[in-house]
Image (cartoon, rainbow, N blue to C red; front, side):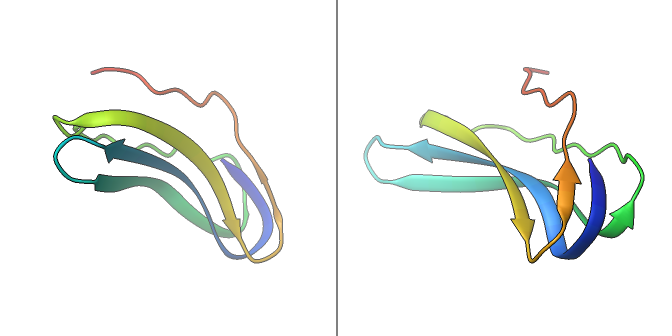
Length: 77
């Protein structure tokens, strides 16, 4: 991630939801970064829930500014 004049925070968020038995929702965060910065490597290693049915990736910027993302990957480790 690279940032320019980010007022509050910028980060990558992965949400997962399990729909069996009861609704489970879990969030995993990579970052945050603030202000102006050169390229920074961010990662979030996590274990998914046993009953996860779906997930999605959000690219979040809170406040003003510009953020660049490059080489984003979701991979099994």
